[in-house]
Image (cartoon, rainbow, N blue to C red; front, top):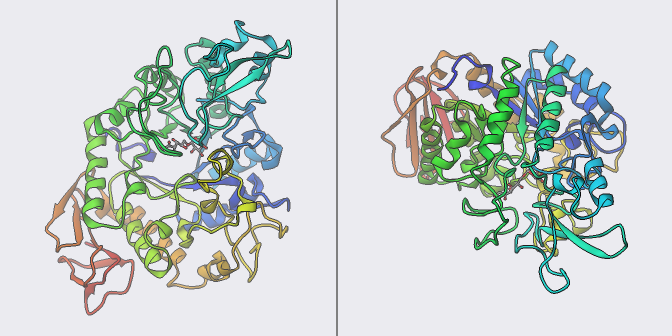
Length: 522
Ligand code: ISL
């Protein structure tokens, strides 16, 4: 692997959705002092680093992914002072801090966009975004046929300073998220300031939002691709334009000034070769590989997803990454069938992920075995719900606040029962307090497997070998350290491979590995 000595090459990252981790000030929304208060919990869980979703100044149209000031922290999350307290407290515990940055777009409230609106067509202020005249005799049709990822057209028409409808601006996401024009050098210069601002304040790296999205094709040609809401293919002209790589090289040159700092890109690209281009030695350090988030609990599919992720990283000698869920994709307990079965499978897959070489990302609540929550229409907040004309419920169901303690909502998450998304009463059985006291809980299980992952020498080595396995199962061995991981995704118990079992996601049945379970052997 590229740099097996780098701290992130086998790190366990914990993704914090800050609205939902812990609320310190009783407004029903999580914040950075709440997160700092949870660091002991994260230290005990054994994670190496946190990745915090956006906490910079934002009108919160897309919960922070609409940034109005990239170099300050939103008061909702406690302001810059709270961020500085958090970084210091995390570092005291040996936990690294990485934060989201959003280079593809700004908020429509960003001073640049407000200036562009006021300045009118053809001005320099408009050149920082994509303002275009409309099609049709009176410019009443959008400049091209692109759709927003959240549904509806990717263009919004503005009222010009003279009071008449005029140009349109591009937003691949919500109307409140105008896309930046990265051909304008001011855009990179400002982004460089942002990177240095946070690196100087001690952050250990960045998760780069829509890392495959910043460059747009010349002339903004119509799309012939059939993308759907929240999904797109590799051929979609909105994404993965080759010019994006020059931007990543410029970003890397800045980050290289801060040894140890890491970049991890959100790269929704499926083709192995095209994905690997982002991980060349002078581009991103890490790239999310989302194959496992799109894979059913099926041995062949999981085998292929793992094999492809490893092969993609190997093309450029990059470090593989593993992620089962995040704030955009449904929780794996639900994806794997929900209920007891979904939970058993999710635990098994956590062992698969932690047995593989590379960096692992755990999404807050995954360690508690949380499932997606069925929320009533009236509480939905994801812009996808409105923009899709109420056909796509969006991503709120996987963003519900974490249950900490007690027997009823808000379960110690907040002093305020009116949490930003309602918490289901059934989570009484899943609180951190209850799971902490139960050696058989999902939380205790995660602590155990993360500790083994961290301490045992058998987890060494950058490659795996697939071993013979019964139908419906898969078995692999870490080539360096020799750890063996077996997963039974079939319907009958299977014999275990030779070796001493050091962990299992479910009790063995007569010495065999039951369905929907995984085991580690040395
Ligand atoms: O089209 C997709 C995948 O095929 C989408 O998932 C898309 O790439 C994704 O929604 C981008 O996500 C990121 O940027 C969004 C924000 O809403 C998400 O939460 C964030 O992860 C806009 O900033």
